[in-house]
Image (cartoon, rainbow, N blue to C red; front, side):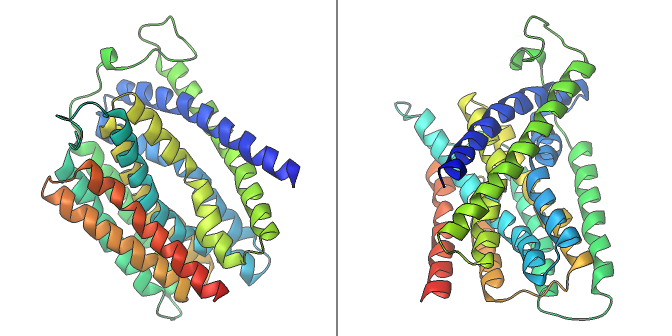
Length: 334
């Protein structure tokens, strides 16, 4: 147990440090590709930080020997969007609230393209409703529909890149950590730092997830609890860490865009894997996860659409995760 706790905290610290290198590197990669802050967050950063949870789903549904092991992959595919739609946005809100204490004039405003974020929530809602609906039906050619999810993500990337704003200015970037004295590092060094950080994030996240599962077993948690709460909470750590780092640097645009882009990946890539390789039939807890996800996304969409999102409202969506956790505890232990 002591070894498990040691590895748990050590891997969490490694993930945080690696995310600092990743955020720094991906900003320079975005600059080299002449991408703006929003596209850097929604495409490059989101793709990288979504790898851990996508890997969990892939390993579970492809190499799982039992239905219970495959269920962990399905649970991760449903639990990941729930964590992003609730806790990840709440982390940004709370970080902004802390960073702006003593600045009443700016305390509640969100400095981001809220209407663009609203469009992301609308895309997500359409995809998510479709994937939950598939979980209620059983038919022979369902696996082929996984292709639609992959194609949808491709269209989303095309839209993000074609509608991007002006590229990031070098003056807005911190020096590349691998080349701190280089004012304008090459793509090679930026990509090298980013890829190395990704490797560390993936490895540390794997260790982190294993410790979460061991702690779940020690506490007597069922596979569904590990799938819906522990595994997604662990694998979404990079997005939360990136959000904290960017907010700490005064860059909430890429912080929010990273979460928004990661949600699109979670709605498509892991879902496609689950639909390809499992029956994709959702039980009560999985449907509840979908319901609380949609409640949170609906609130986010309404506020972003009106450009009326505030720091308190962004922080409040974390309450939906608390309600889901309470429901799950009642369902399994009542």
